[in-house]
Image (cartoon, rainbow, N blue to C red; front, side):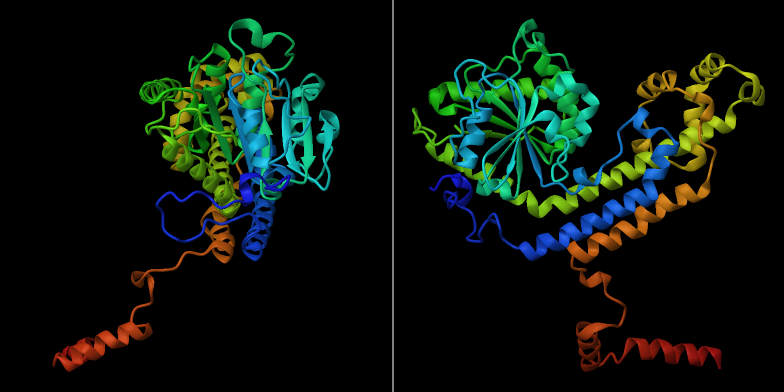
Length: 465
């Protein structure tokens, strides 16, 4: 394959599926353009109906920073996480089909920086502070982690085919014990949480030879729990162990991952060696090739599903902002007048802390909010205790909630239906409409039953007379 092509432009191995082709990079550009326009409308709706409620209710303090247009309209991002030497950088080199000097692949820990690999006309390394200033990138929000972190972040642009549709994010390998904290002046799990929240797919990579999960990697996996639907596990270097051991390793991996992520369903695991080298043990060659093809298929399908994923994210956020706004306004309305007028912030915090469970229940009951939209009361109490200006909670404004509800119920469906409509079934068609309905009436008449609608009308007329 030519440099920059990689497996992205090669035909996927046959794995016994139907003959319909997997969407390839560059396919259906008109449809992707329509979806991008729909995403711009979605972000406009968010900034108009939701962002004002977020700002007035301190949502960034309690939950999440506002979404920027660059983040919302960014290409699908794939985040690779794993312990040291699990093959994250090697997989990116395999996908891009390039052997860049910036891909440092060694048996010992080599990658010590977060690296966003994106498309560009030529290969160029962009350091962290400069990368956060790029309007065409989506990393302005990383500035909240400070200069110490930005020294450990960089972006790499290169003309690889896969990067026309995706951005790949490489991460430092997690080290065992206390070694991981040496030289890191930033909160590694917090950065991973920020990245995972904005990623469209998270690939957790494991080395078949070392499945032990270190303390820091466990913390990283724990912050992935809210995003477990985006997580896929890759058991890499699987060709390096024999067939009998592979079964035991696979079972141990499922046990370790399930114990940490605690998901109701088993996380999807792909087993292979994600590079271009020959397999050492070929007992499961068919399985390895099939899972390689499955990973490529999932990556190729990411651009086509971007609109629906972003819609899911924005609607979920709308529901949480609405619930958050209702809770804060109710807290304000129940605060005794003497505390509102004369109480110090310390006394107001103490009153809220003592009455928070009752106020939560009353707010949920008053506004008929689903339990699934309510915030975690423990985390909410902790954030409320550190809120500056606690006496400036927002007052109730029904227009704010009505605007968000209208966006969820009417405006979002209207936007995505135009770009990603779903065909209606026969039951959804108007009564008496369409050729099929006329055909059914003709059949009844031919069987001697006449027109049921006409018979009912005649019966009504006789009754009225």
